[in-house]
Length: 379
Image (cartoon, rainbow, N blue to C red; front, side, top):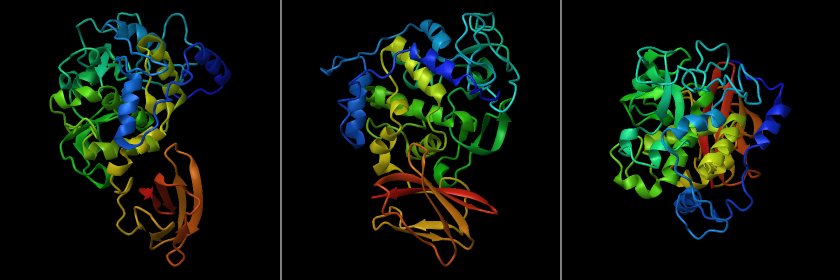
């Protein structure tokens, strides 16, 4: 379904009915690296950490999730427009939503379409609750099991087909669902290199959403990570938490699919029920600040051995673009903002980046034959 921006004013008014970021909420988040991750964990956990202000998260019952979804996961962004209706609320399901046209099926909250233990043998029969981090990872324990930040509404059949499959990218899908979501072997190249087994790939529209859900989870449950069951996406540590191949994949998704109004509204709605927030929606740059030192510098898009950027990391502010063709170069920051543009040729290929601050950037390189993107670290 196409996004409907015509009633943006109405949406913003409706959004104001939900809680926003409270004053001082992130005041104690002052560090960098994994120190910052722990500081954020203390802000969003259910402990009394002696913060001022102190917001302790509230545990929902498993049944409360469906009630929360009626505030947080209603489709008012694509074919349907806001504000959220009193009845006939259509679910926004990331596994079945078609952003560019009509969905093949829709689910209504409070209807017989909600999972009752039957059906789910094909798409469009029932919807249920999908643990983006599989239930088996944390043994089905609470509060994880009912955390609406990462437990999302989804088509029951697709949920079952994914099962415990990690997220990734595939070029050879063995199964493709009606909105383009795929299952297949991880493509194991450039930034997705390092994992060769089966992965579950959502559509581009929601890849950033999934990434920020994972960043939330490994921050919120930092203290529990070392006791969880083995899962390919996790490295078993409480610090980095996300295994390297998947950290690079999720970071790429985070950059290429910036925070949307839908995510902001969802975060605000869940805060009214959970009393905690997803920091990586409120401040996307936290991702870079925490994981910058362990991110790889592999190519972020098409694999083109003829084009490279160096040095990377960049320390002298002069970037060289090795290319056999003329290119348009665009550089984006972690918020997805275009911060620099220039044209380069095979001979005039030096780029002065003295105006850019230290950090992680995406370099988009375009020619008449295509586009590739690479990650750049400036120190």
